[in-house]
Length: 271
Image 1 (cartoon, rainbow, N blue to C red):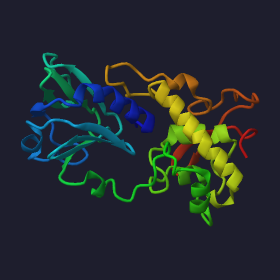
Image 2: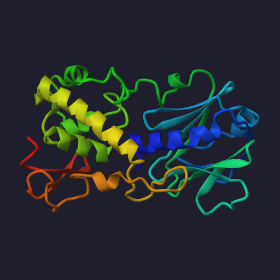
Image 3: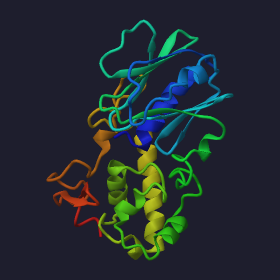
Image 4: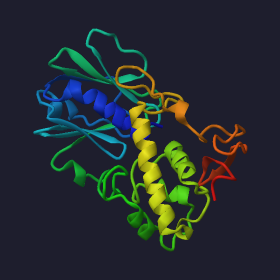
């Protein structure tokens, strides 16, 4: 599933092609995604100028004066800006034709993505309301995370993957951040000191910023807005490397299921 760096990479890539462009036509080939595509999407979006493209958690927002289109890439979705004369391929479900003659095309083989329309304040929408802070914002810090963790018996990995605690932390980057901070992923969230939470927050920010700089991680389906893969997979220290040598100590990377997710860690470097 595309995580925060992949979604941010996509946002940055499509924004330059979308901002100040008008949507001329909306083509919906498959209306049944994770939720049904609204039947009035074309009526609300056609003729509108896109004034901004933002991200909240793993959602993308195309803002207009009339409202906002809310997009999610699901498990396997991607967005590409291409010439309008390029014929659609299987799983190319939605096109937004721009006045530039280019198309924003949503491809989603597994159809777990979404394209919804929001009138009014998009951040009051049920999918966005109540989310935790952005991990790269200043209000996400070690003191905040320590306060939220007090008394919590859940594993620290599940804790930082809770979108009401902090948004955008998927399995890949949670594993990598905990390795960088030297914290065992199964350790109870409430049994980690303030000092170690401050280190974890720094690690989260560094891992995410590094991943964004490399264009995200391509493991299965993710491609950038121009069709290129993300290259952060070459920087992964533990995720997907069970049985390989730890880059710090040489101990074999271990795999354990925590919270129904595969978790990769070094038993020597992470306590």
